[in-house]
Image (cartoon, rainbow, N blue to C red):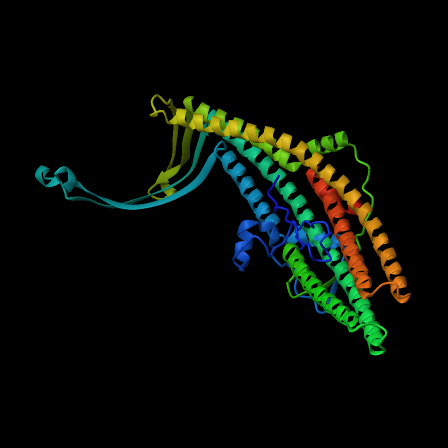
Length: 477
């Protein structure tokens, strides 16, 4: 599996009204994991957090669905672009390996003007002329050369397996981009929900403050009630400002992943809420992962490539045959030319190479053992990923159920606190605390739904089917 950013968690103070909120994973955040604000520092750590903008700035607000977000990511994400270019390099390497086995043909046209100095052989002492005068000749021929050896054949097969590795890596990169795009989309949606909840909280705090100030002015309530209400209202304003900033930063993070200009204003039109997870059997998920995990296919192809490399290095101990020849016409002019040809064969047998071949074989064998170990480890890690993601999803299901119950209880508690306050049985402190408990429960519900959707994405990522199944698991039509 290609590397993705480590899951982080938001911590809350024990004195905060949100202290009971569950930790929210933030798997794709272009603003973290760096002390350098430059884009290059982020890209150097994870190219999937960067992108190449391919579309111009659109005036106004751009509506975007989840499928459009994923489509933009699959076209613009830097990690995928890097992988595509790596795949192009592997294709070029296979062609280069193939060319070593194919005949090499070239056409040659030669025009020669020359003289020969005889002084180099003592012409003056022999009484010969110093020079043989200027003369010319022309030649046109076609040259042919081909090398035949088993080492090049195995290198070609190794290059073919390397191309399979890059193909699987490219497919795996597409799954990572889908996970990154959808996770960032869900993050923006959850921030939008927090903004709406904070706006509702502020409206309630303002209404309560107005009520208590009126009661204080009429000397029905003590002044401390108005002070408490003002503190609650200012806290609500502060929370609204913070979640609005968080929303804008999440939107900026999304634009960096999918390749939108950072100045682009947009609105998300696919509302992804809570949907029940399709009933999945562990054995079925493990079989799906074995068949669909592209990183697993890449690891298997890498083992085959290493085997061919061992055979290629071993075959260097065998004789090598080379055939060459050319044919054409040569003469003073092409009008007075004579047919010429030349054919040669060369058999090269390595006798002593200073143990170079032995060293190359040992290096290839070490690479093979490493590839086999990595493949076996990845098989176990695949099973671990699926089991771990399934456990997380089941825990997320339970978290949403608890969050729903807590939200209902908090709403009922606020209603009872209002009734008690209006009846004069309690003071404003109980009412403000009930409001804060409702805010905490609402935030907990938002975080739980987001974590549940993220757990579903993690599950289909672990099975290698993120690109195929993301819409189904998120309940998006």
